[in-house]
Image 1: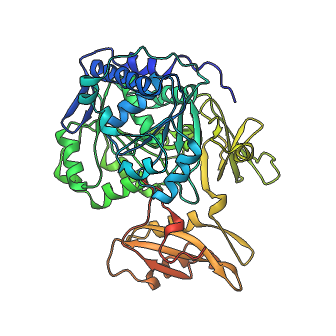
Image 2: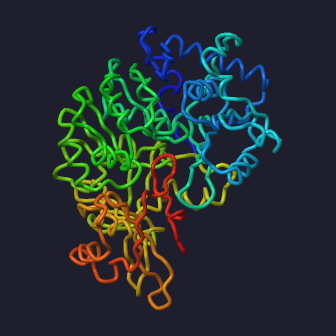
Image 3: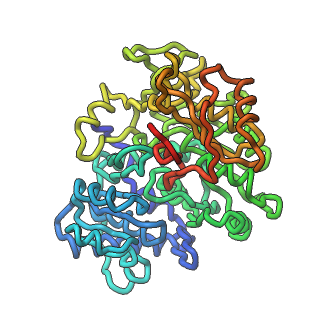
Length: 495
């Protein structure tokens, strides 16, 4: 599908962002790249790809951890006229190899052991070949290949909360449209220092990287693994902006030593990825009163973004993920495809310049998901009278118990509101009489929390069949690298 001219190419946006060539564009530990050095590295990376691949324009696969070399390989691929196909390095080999076989990349750039990939017949180089020092020492510069809005920029393989990874194809126009829209509701400036802990092989992280560079700010690659250390670096590195998923918010609010550090420079905080309890969002606003807190909705198929909730509406639109970003339209439809009036739930459909081109190598799934110009998201929600979107769950997250359709998300919200619960996940499991019954997996904040306490709490807020019949206490919930709960990996999951 064609979206037409998005108003300039993606690389042009990034190069224009560096209006001050000696300003720092990217920090990765001790590595600091100015805008001049970043652009030089991108062109040298493109030249390295051209020298190895000649005129072949097949995708360059990147299976790597975050780092300056990842950024240079990714943008170098675009500058050479090749799409960057990005896959989580956390995928087990038995899932990774079929993806690469289907993709047939011209080259695989990786931080993994290259031997198994080479043994499977894939041309492999280490990501360190694209480190700034390696490029400066060995590669000439190449002229960037001009791209149109409809040219393919990324093939992003979702790490998957269920099933095999899907390759979401995003054009230059898709990405530029979202970069421009984000900068409307999250105005960044050259003095912004944006901490990036999200994995670059996901679109959310790419939106942080690309919008910050387009604004002329500094991207600071960091890790969330050491929570006290991360919070200390927010202060010492003078961070002004941070993006995360609800998992990051929960950890910051419940387990981080926020009071020990001066975080007054933090002026932008965005959250997306899955549902964030209203209480957590409001607590975040209270803890960071000087920050512009934005809750957002989107998915890989919408180039990471479809809606954003203005900070001024957090209080009166509690539970909403906002209104569509510029150029995007929403519909709510029932099972027959009929539009639903305000307040009535149905499937969320999205149309706009942010919507993907399709799924790589899967025309049947593309046809099922993109119909009549609309992306069928699989999310369930409703619009209010002002056009604000409220999500209530996913089609695949509905539990059918004794003839009732029960929202796993609703139960998760109730559990998350209990003061002794850090986080929870809910799913259905087969039941010989009810069809399905509800089981909850709970991470305790209070060590002595019992099933009986939770059952009583749920009975005060839920219908009888929605009260979990099974309970499992766990130390943590299994997640994708981007923080989404992988329900198929919950301990003892039987469905």
